[in-house]
Length: 113
Image (cartoon, rainbow, N blue to C red; front, side, top):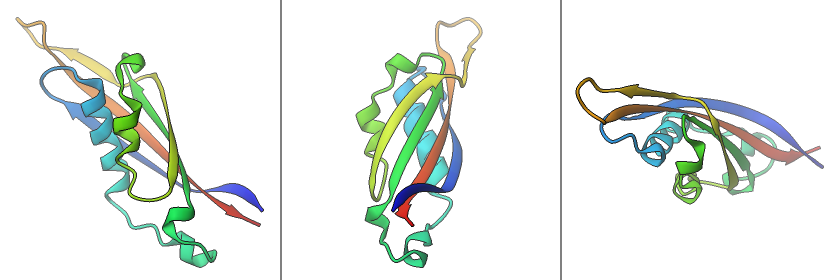
């Protein structure tokens, strides 16, 4: 058997006030995952907990993301989180505050023949 990518979900999340990369990343992953129901496991004789999800988060400062909080969003299976430079940081006029946008890609893998 071999791990094969079955699904790729993408999402966007924001922290309107505060520029919190983790908050935006969690929201981006929820956006990617919460708009579907994956029934692919049943088609290949597996359940949802057999899947592996590789998450990539793009934010301006990837080192500030708490990967454990992002990983905790996954409702099934096991996963990994990788952070990369991406997203947007939009300054607010007359303030040191920013609006932060994060992007998420969740690649779902199943171990199939």
